[in-house]
Length: 283
Image 1 (tube, one colour):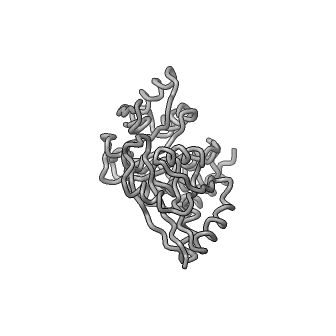
Image 2 (cartoon, helix red, strand yellow):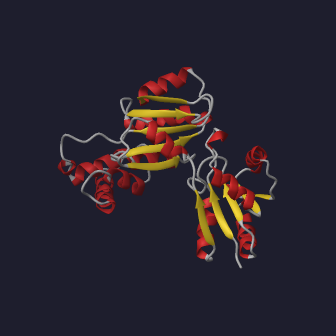
Image 3 (cartoon, helix red, strand yellow):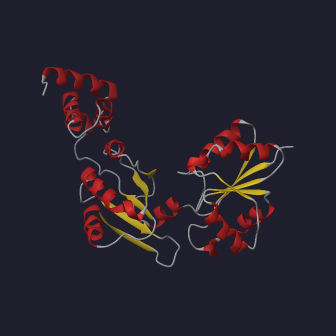
């Protein structure tokens, strides 16, 4: 009889936040699948447990097949990330997808999630929000992702590492302007926890002079409601916006998609007019 794949959330910082069910699940599991076995080893030591472990980090996902075979052979697996709920902006999602496709029972063991925790204390609108996780490392892809969010009215949540924070704040200011409201949540539940609601411009200036430290959750306000209906923009104007984006390094398809955001026009409609403009007014 096949075993069970438990998706186990771990504390996002303070180990005193460990729920009893999480500890019990680790204790009952036959083995642990960890994003980083060194981090999880410290957690298991805190619980006084010794368990066989296998890593499933992004560049070793071929091990996912071995994990699933062990579960199919009858072993119970506790899968965890370094902190918070695994399989969300985490390579463990591939294992869950494959487990469900193979008929393996998947059981969630929830606890804290950094994105929801940050949202709750951000002071931003919590009624509707979108989770973007980590932005792409590739500069062009990052710029295109932010362009897709130009018309996004929901609160937007990002994760960011300290060594990338300054560049990301520069990119956010360029995309959304210095006055956009943002809450930076640093080292949540840890000793140096900091929650700072400010503007993109102020955050950019602060971290230009101060070294970012710790892991960040960025909770950014959505686009303000327009005083004029979006439908007033003509298709030609949307295509002109797309043309400007191509001048910033966007491909035509990505530019059309970004320019169509918040308009009544589809990406394909903007794309067709964009091509017409390019053919009519070659550089």
